[in-house]
Length: 438
Image 1 (spheres, one colour):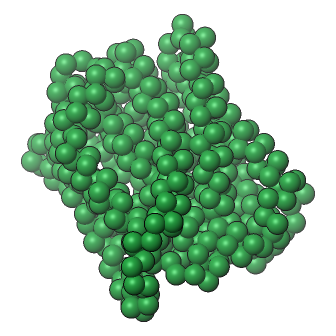
Image 2 (cartoon, one colour):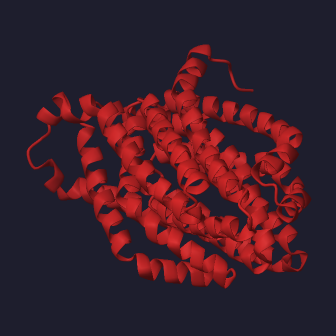
């Protein structure tokens, strides 16, 4: 039994609710992108956006260590009473370098990605246009990861909410103007995404101006960015999270590629259905992000009691929200599919595979929550190892069920999500009983 702690529950919700709203806007943006192109006169537009979006999910989420690592180190520095600004500056420097490199490498990246993903020639041509435009927003997108991680580590969780509302509202407006009014099809969606990233970066710098440009800037130690040991520590943690993210996104990339090989209609239907997973993950990530902040602060203070309370409290709310998501998917799954597309073939295909979405709250929730716990404790190596094992389990399951077509794909995805939670829970339990935080 988990003891009730109203004060801790209030603190968790104070941290989680802005992040919950912020995270929900991300799949809602994807929902708008899908709806805008899903109502055009051919499924190739929806399929092209699905391919292009998966390329950027792979690219950007591969570098999500800029968010996770920044949160962990910032929250621990805050708990230990140390300077936090230098953590952000290192992350922003790294994000600028990586984002610029992605722009330069775009032709090679798009060729390799589209070769792996497959799809018809028409879909690939449209997806190539989408990638070539949207990649211009890479430096801002990665910089936003650093700013959001910094804000969460400082418990300034209202800032990510403001940033994402600004980004996604501008993206929605530009989507409608560029696609529906000016008829730029997938190119309009790409322009809207790239421009909104820069608007979000500008907003984040403005809302964090006191923490960045105030007393902390004046008190910044001379030569702080030139210190080798902290940068090496940041790179080591980021390396492990990077490998972990690559493993995760390899599964999603492979999932999309196999869907493409089953035809444009199945690819488009899976693009609709993946919105359910995004809605779930981004809702639960509000509590995972709260766990990052609370676990990181407790780890920085070396406070075992506060650490256990943070893990138990955020886990309880994750379980409650997962149950609510299961009921919502059961009641609203069909209407959501009809909202996303009015193409009969895509709609009927998505409805056929809808029952697999009802399993996701049961199979995926523990992994999302424990991601937050591990990030706060900067257990990057353990995150990497458990993800690699779960990924290694995914492919045999898919191979054994490949004769089931898309049903086999969704079964493998659910088992992959479940194995993540089981493996991370086992690792955490072993660390807890061995008193890792003594």
